Image (tube, rainbow, N blue to C red; front, side, top):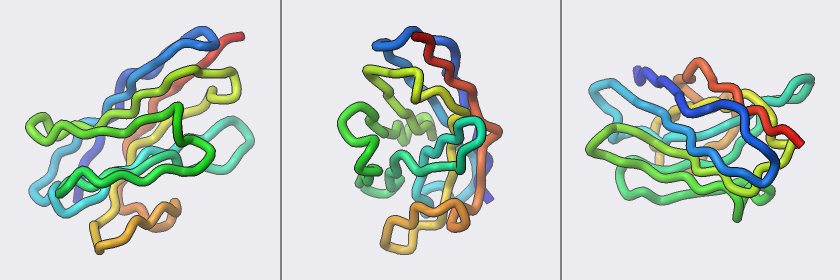
Length: 125
């Protein structure tokens, strides 16, 4: 099991940037794919991006590609989500999640094995 703790959320003005962090712990982190999701009020949780611990390969939701960048620091066991050009529509709780690496990206909520507690991002207009 992987334990995940997000940080870095907060209030930002439209057009601004934020970087979220997800600290991971557990004995077999290298065997997981790390993911970011978000959930806005009244909406379903949606996939943003994923990265493999092993090679740093990435995969993005088409709607998020370009403004959001996922990265990892293996030495710190931390995954990041850099978010640029934020709009009020990006307001949501952002979650870090881990799924076992089986050789393909699985980006559904049901495929995740572990979740963080979430961090709130609020973008003001």
